[in-house]
Amino acid sequence: MRKLSIILLLPLLFWLSPSVGSCSESPMYQISETQLTALENHLTALEANNAELMTLLNESNQELTEATRQLNESKRQIAELKRELQALKSESETARKSLAIANEELKRASESFKASEKAHARIEGRLRTQRNVWEALAAVLAGICIAR
Image (cartoon, rainbow, N blue to C red; front, side, top):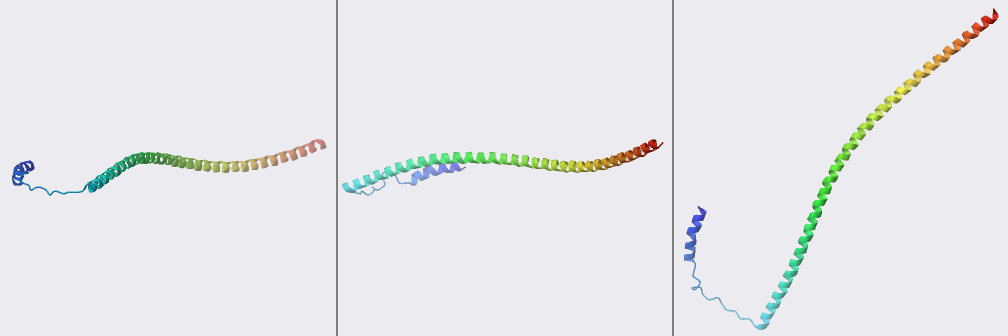
């Protein structure tokens, strides 16, 4: 629908527009040779400035490309370091739990050893007492045997 209206409006625009031949002549300007030289010098200076600016733009674009590459590399390294940090945190937590378990088992083993030492001391005390009783009994029996 839009193409159709454009196609229908184009001939109307050509018909309404003034023809090239019917346009009035544009005004004529005159400048002196020194003014022309000054304009040419100004144009040359502008072209030189434009070339310099284009060179600077190209250099800036190259620097921007390099900075973007470095930024992307830094982002990649940061992501890798974050993954490594997370892995190390996980390992650290696992090690902490293992250490807590080992400390608990060591505490239980120490308590068990102390209990065993106490039991051993009691048994040793009983055996010493028993040996002393047997020695006394042997001395009494030896004395009875000698007395008979």
